[in-house]
Length: 144
Length: 113
Image (cartoon, each protein chain N blue to C red):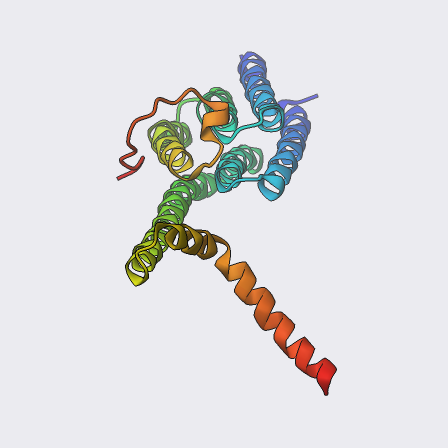
């Protein structure tokens, strides 16, 4: 037994183990109930991919794969930063739209009860509107 | 001498794989995103340190080991930053934060600027 033969078996089994862990992470990224769970799982997936690339580089004696791993690390970090910032921006815009709608509802009729009703309608209003627009053509079709 | 280096390096790699396995287990054991982040950040620091250190020991002292050390260094700088951004996002958007953490009632000023 020489070192290259043994190291071939060792690196192969290590890569197989990492791929099994990656499938577990992928499962969490699919099932994660919140957006943060998914981003955490994707971040860990990137780290495991970098491990695979580095092991492959020593196994095959290709040193340029290490450059690929370095670039992959930078892009993985960039992906997390961009996803986080974009999602925060979307969330803030959504909040601001809702606040604006409540503000204008308050000015339309000063009554406090109707303002609260409008705010509640603004929260669940999209669903109702969709249901109504989906129900209207069906009813028309039934009449004809 | 070659064999000694190979065995020490492979022990380091096995340690790193065990840490990654524990982190993947933690991703499924915990119930809240911040706890899961705690488990998953272990791969980003200790796991990749052990695996790449094992590869450096196997490879010996040359230009490749410098690149591997650069990857470790980059991860140690990048991982806390991304964890901070993720935690700030989770604190700002999560609805069930109070069920899972002890938070004081203060006015939120936005987690990430």
